[in-house]
Image (tube, rainbow over all chains, first blue to last red; front, side, top):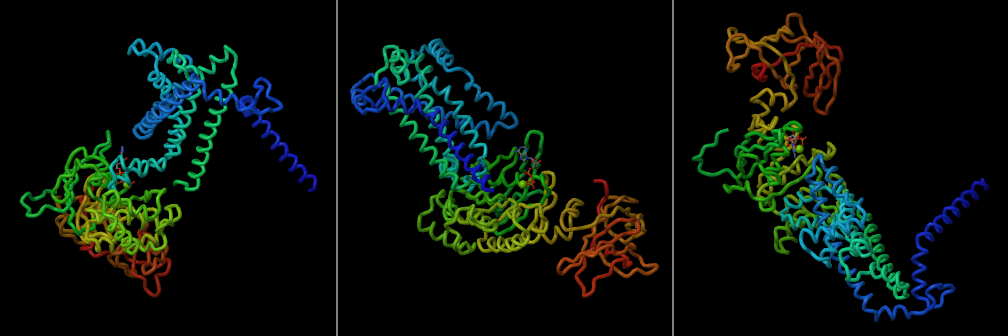
Amino acid sequence: MYAQASNERLTKWLMGAILVIAYAFLYMPIIHILFASLSSRPNFPYPPEFDYGSYIRLYTNTVYQDAFLNSLIIATCTSILSTVLGFLATVGVLRFGGRKALLYAAFFAGPLFVSEILLGISSMSLYYLVFELQGNMVTAIIANSVHCFSFCFLIMAALLYRYDWRMNEAAVVCGASPARAFYEVMLPLTWSGILGSLIVAFVLSLNGLDISFYLLGATPTMPSVAWGALRYGVKPELYALSSIINILVFAAITVLYFVARSDKKRPME
Amino acid sequence: MNQSQNGAEAPYIRIANISRQYGQVRALHDLSIDIDKHEFIAILGPSGSGKSTLLRLIAGLDRPTAGRIFFDGVDVTDLPPHKRGIGMVFQEFLLFPHRTVRENLAFPLRMTNQPPQMILERLDWAEAILSLNGLMDRYPNQLSGGQQQRVALGRGLVTHPTLLLLDEPLANLDRELRNEMEVEIRRYQKQLGIPFVYVTHNQEEALSMSDRVAVINGGKLEALGERQLIYDHPPTPFVARFVGKSTRFDGAFDAASKKVDLQRYNYSFPYEEVAERKGNARVEVFVKNERFELLPSRSGSAGIPCTVADVVLRGPFVEYILETEADERIIAVQPKREEPLALGTKLSLSWNPSQCHVFPAGR
Ligand SMILES: Nc1ncnc2c1ncn2[C@@H]1O[C@H](COP(=O)(O)OP(=O)(O)OP(=O)(O)O)[C@@H](O)[C@H]1O
Ligand SMILES: [Mg+2]
């Protein structure tokens, strides 16, 4: 009996250790960048020797700021556009898809399997060919939305699959117009999926290099500036910027976590 | 059903020649019903007969392929559901899970833009009439089935709608609660004086609550009339089989001797009016189980000889499972006496000819 108890303890320790290793594997690069950005010696920041200089220089560097702003605009617009389109597609497939719903869904998820570089190049030439559109922010947003749409579709389809559409009917016979039925009943019951889709699309398009790169040309975005910086030697400002972005992304994930939890507290039948 | 065009007053609700086709499926076919202002009407039919479809058409959740619907003389066929001013109660309740009972009840009042004072009054009214005291701040998943059902009813009633549609609202409740709610629902209807259209496939429910019963079968209206009339004088074999519990016999009608002959049982009874046919004609005979007469068997007695195979006690009634000589089983329901008949008792089964229903067979 004693042996068994110690066995259990051993298993617990082992599991804990594996967990720590797994997390370390995932987060070491991120932590490393954080250290590097905060250090006076960014190339080998151990032992740490704190210095906020890179953040101050970042604050005055307009190229990075422009890039950050552009990325933010692209990410925001893309997440909204692709979530709206994804939502409409989800509603269409789930409500009116009938027996072919799976087929429609498969084709909506299809663009997931196209590589981003291909999508970027092809969008660039297509938009130019058909619409004579030069690469700019708008085309970048559209091309990014094509890529993010499929993720948004999958995320919302997984959630709306369990939604009882007759809730809308119940609302409508109570005198709610379809629009009111949507935001009084459907939105509160499905918003965690919609928020999840917004966040995922935001993060994807914020960090996506390839698509924006081909469609924007000289306009800087975060990933393209970072990529360019690689060729001329990495500056610590870049570390600072990526750390800021990482922190933003973690904030978004934290929000998602709490949303999911508050949703569980009030299970829907 | 022909409606007189010169009738002085339009009926409160008029459903005129409604059809609904889903691809190849004919869910409803040329169905017309007029409903009065103070009426409780039950729509009775087997599963798949089109009851829910009819209700959804009245609510505006679905559009008819043909026909019109009028509320108070106004054609509402093209009006969307939220402009029809109706209430509806669903079998699965469909309460809003993210809202408390109070918010659920206030929802239709808010959607129709009632003043706050009115909302408070109606909430109090609903709380009292539906005995929801102490439940108002709970969420639907914290309520029992019966309580949820009452909230669903309340949500349908708070606006005092033009009419209330109920789609098998008691199907998910246990029997005891059902009987209780039947009485309650009927009471609300009388109190509010608005028509209730109550869909059910349970004939007992239909008979216990309604003023009139509409029987539909395969999307068509089989019968429409006072519940007593539908029960006592079913106009078609389907209604005879479906409303009430009855036993069916095959027989032949002899027009010369004015008798119905059940050759199989060697039993015949006089019968005046089998419509339509002359000469010897095959007929179906329906007898309500509670209208059998059981007499002690004597040699030479006229009835169908049988023996008591089983006795089922049902409160104030006794169900005798009888076995005929042809090894068939017939159920006869009798008021409970002090001493029910013993198993194996030999009986003679007969009925009052005016109490049974005879239809030409093979329709
Ligand atoms: N949306 C639809 N698409 C295709 N067929 C339908 C649709 N809705 C109903 N039907 C068909 O119409 C017929 C009537 O259906 P309805 O739901 O009205 O039956 P019901 O009398 O309410 O049955 P139940 O007692 O089982 O609820 C059925 O044959 C059904 O299969
Ligand atoms: Mg139904």
